[in-house]
Length: 283
Image (cartoon, rainbow, N blue to C red; front, side):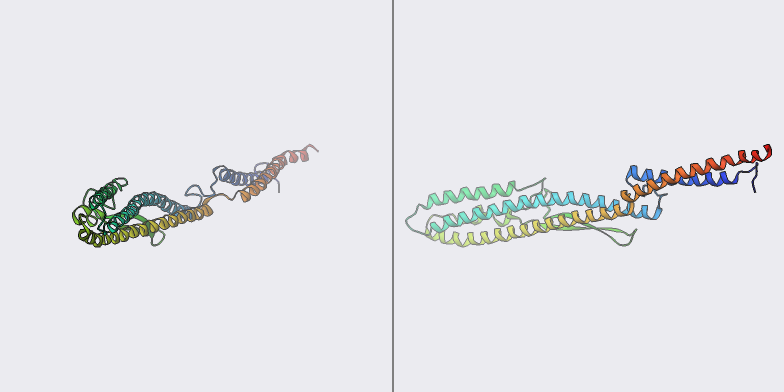
């Protein structure tokens, strides 16, 4: 039945055109922004998950910065400790040479004293951003441990976030390598023999401390790599949920433009129907 009061064909064509235009606008927005789900109204559940993960990713990026600072602090201390081990080895060589009777013990002691001062200078200088893992007072507040934020863990989609740390202990070379007070001055072969026993103890202490710092540096490096890879994986996960598949969007855009043209033609034909009815009365 045809009616001059209600053009049902035009109403259906118009509704179809509006639907196509709405979809076309959504696809064009997704292409221009790069996000299939950019707001909560697009898909509230996926949007909420994505935002939670994005906040965790931001946290892990901050952790990366903290780990880099921790790595640098430990690296400086580790380099200082290794240099101290080399200097102690040189002192040991001088003490061994002093075991002979026909050597200048005073000159050897002068060389040893200079190297002891060098060790003290290394200990004092081995700080980064105010933290010195070789001294008795790590941070100027009596601290003996350096806590470095290492990771975040979440239990459940909206669960509590827990932070975990890597603790690096000070090796306190300032106290344990007090050669000025605890290394016998060499004046003869007897004092050289005593100094040899003492320097061996100091050397082993320095080696142990340097090894501990090296292990901490390695752990921090591994953790930094893990956090970086974890953040990248999480970012890929978020991208898979909310980013626009450009190939699919391109195909959808072409299809919708075709549908739009057909809907416009249908609306034009439907709008012409009342004029065709008039032809019945003219004949």
